[in-house]
Length: 598
Image (cartoon, rainbow, N blue to C red; front, side, top):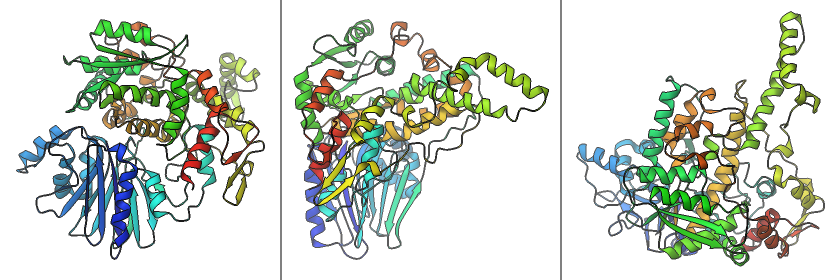
């Protein structure tokens, strides 16, 4: 992991650009405390701060091709760099360093901007082609890494962090109120490109941008799609799923610095740890619990599993004082108001992990989203299907339709009596746990920035705007795809990056490997989704690898004790908002906005 920035000018680089670029890197030095580097010509300047993970002695960036006509800075990891180096060697191409990032340079020389299609990893890079005066920027397929951009007078600026662009290049920021409110209501944003600063945008997952004399052009080189076109048997599907999971863990264990697995005691992290151990590696695991008695604490399960597997087990404990201290600390590293309350626990954990001496962590992010692990989302998808099935019976004409209706009613009478369905596709159904708090906050909420006051209740929006049309019977996939694009990508992955990098740590997510994602999304829904049994397909795949007492334990997840979170919210005084009601999401958004909007 690192921090990267780049400035491109359509005519000539300004004298202040180099100074601003240096300050941008200084603002995110925690992302790369080991090294820094800069390069510029008369049109483009790029910089990087480096957290050294692979190629410790000779991986300093920017990196150059042989004649220095291509310049590269990259944030993230190219996990398949070993295989790519072998492929490049077979073509007679030699590399100068041991770092994974360097493979991008010869791939660009061979394939141009299509080089990104050969990369398997998490990354956001800026590559400048001196000969063609073209800046090429790309983000990984899933969106594990981030990069922002703003079109400014005479050019374009990119950076790993929004606040770097905001402080140096946006003199008069304009507020996007809907982008500010969405994560307060839904935990994550609902627009993949817009940020709460109108002038600053996100490069989207699987997107590339080129900037040259013809202006800025965006293009997707990959988009996540459900194809349902796998032609094999169920057993073959499971075998391929396990193979890809194992392969993803293997390549993501590659590192020249100490690596550990975050072990929660749940299915996903236990799977990652068990697969890491299968090839005879020494595996360190880190488990976190809470002082006192809390239902969220899974240390006993994790400790048992670690002993059985022969992991080197590390245990951490967090107290309420860790939470109070953590809120002020973590908000200093956020530049978007993503509001998942588990961020407090994550921050406290990452601080303690850093003290243990690890630099790279593997986690189970993505398992629930990929394998239908959220019972409420499953119920919402099933309910939507019931509604569509019921509607398809009408108009009620002919004997066949009558028989169809009778059959439907015999199976679903209780849902019809309960005003239709167990869940409806409505505002409350998504982010239900914060629905009431949000609307209590919004009753009389105002936002004051400088001399301007905004009545927040004037802004109405829905996460269901523009919902895609999904095939009949695939409604649960519509729910999960929406959740992946919003909560997972914009909140969970964002917070994982910001909180780990705030402690100079790198977090990797093998279950989000794009080849694994493509495979699972190619499977028929009936292979991988069993109504009323979350993650049953994944559990079948992991049978004999992860024990049943983990596979079939009640779902808990790495959540913060409610009392801790409540205490943080109630101790806070609004600085930008005015409202009679406080809750964690509004408090965090207020704090982030107050720190950035100066």
